[in-house]
Amino acid sequence: MALKVDHVSYLYEEGMPLSRKALDDICLDIPQDQFIGVIGHTGSGKSTLMQHLNGLLTPTEGHIYYMGRDISAKDFDRKMLRSKVGLVFQYPEHQLFETDVFADVCFGPKNLGLPKEEIEGRAGEALEKVGIPREMYSMSPFELSGGQKRRVAIAGVLAMQPEILILDEPTAGLDPRGREEILDQIRQLRRQTHITVLLVSHSMEDVAEYVDRIIVMNQGRIMYDDVPKAVFAHYRELEQVGLAAPQVTYIMNALKESGLEVDTQATTIQEAACSLRKVFSAVGR
Amino acid sequence: MDIIEAKEVSFEYVRRDEEGNVEGTTRAVDHVSLDIRQGEFIAILGHNGSGKSTLAKHMNAILCPTEGTVWVDGKDTRQESEIWNIRQSAGMVFQNPDNQIIGQVVEEDVGFGPENMGVPTEEIWERVEESLKAVGMYQYRKHSPNKLSGGQKQRVSIAGVLAMHPKCIVLDEPTAMLDPNGRREVIRAVRALNQVEGVTVILITHYMEEIIHADRVFVMDQGHIAMEGTPREIFSQVERLKALRLDVPQVTLLAYELQKSGIPLPDGILTREEFVEEVGKLLGK
Image (tube, rainbow over all chains, first blue to last red):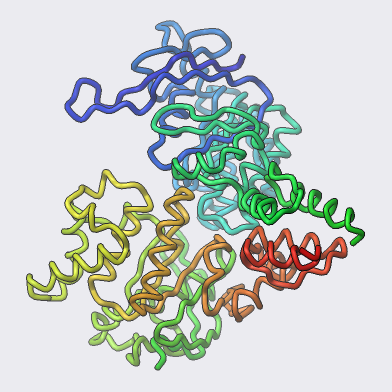
């Protein structure tokens, strides 16, 4: 197991009158080579949990193990952990600061104290993975579009060559094509490198389309942890906690209620279209 | 009566190098003409960088046109002496609720606008009450904005604008940072303002589902208005929208996929109910 979260709880403002539990007895296994979606309403604890995974926050109770070793242990190398578990925050383009795109992506590996050739090799590779062409390397980050800036910021984390990549709402504020481009790039990246990706998202449609497993957070606890179809079958319960199913799931359920034998487990357009084509061909249309 | 009229409006940003010398100009809005009538629900779509936010900022005189003229409630936005009247007629709500809320208590925040306008104290409280009720946040009037969810904060921002008794509200991606529930709450509040209070709404968004109830949709591309029509007219053109880096609601896309495999569903289906009905018709139910 790449990461193991073992009965972790976290208290904000521990010992203070306003102290509250942001995480409550979380247990999770995060293996290598998996695409995981993390959903939950604002304040459900998902960002707090993500910040535990690379040691930015330390559990009040419980332990987190990276490759079997407790990351809170005194002799544990946290700097190594942060290069292995890469965290891309929301609106990461606000963190671009170098004079050109290439220098910005070099910043991380440079801090690892690597030789110059390796730094530049990694930066070039990372930029290639996110689809930023060579002509843009010498441009100022501020000359890029929103989607491009975001991809450069992601490249900055990839250049650290993480084994686990955590993306906190990487598509917020992007136009529909920009969203698709980023998510397709991530899918492509996973095919090439078998990196584990945790995608925190408010878009149920994106999660349904891309991930293999969904973790649903609510009030600091894990509500569901399963494959997308199984999670979205609980759409009524998800609504209770401020979430929803992909719109396709609602359409299929409405069709079912109208008396049609359709697959209510469909969560993507392709699956829904496939199920409906079968219904139509059964009546000879 | 037009609440907003734009005639041949162009806007150029001046690009500067590091020493502040002018490098050139970028035309973000290019000869746009439009009329928005009092009480309409208008949606503006467009990819990142299409000029939609720049255009929106002309609607309450945050920006003034480089060429052409914008009239808000009959007043030319270049008339400095009318600027406060213009901003009172057309209020603006932005993407990030945390950048817009200044009060320590919800009701104080909402009262800030009318207070600045010199409204008598008695009336301020009346306005605060009715505005908070209109967005469904009255029970939170004594709360600290810090403790609210994203959707609730955004509704407080809208109430803050509403308390200035505007004729028109411009919302620039008000739901981009919200979870599904927050998005629903905000869109419901916006629709109620339009339908119950008769406030003109101009909504900019990347979520196609949010605008199916709009009266008219404008699609921006490269500073121009590329498409204009009712949601049904606009969303019937799936390929054209995709070419403009946009999308259609999932139900529309599902119908489109089925059309492509020869199932004769009509163009531009916008809601689940319509879809179920049309599928039922075809299957003779």
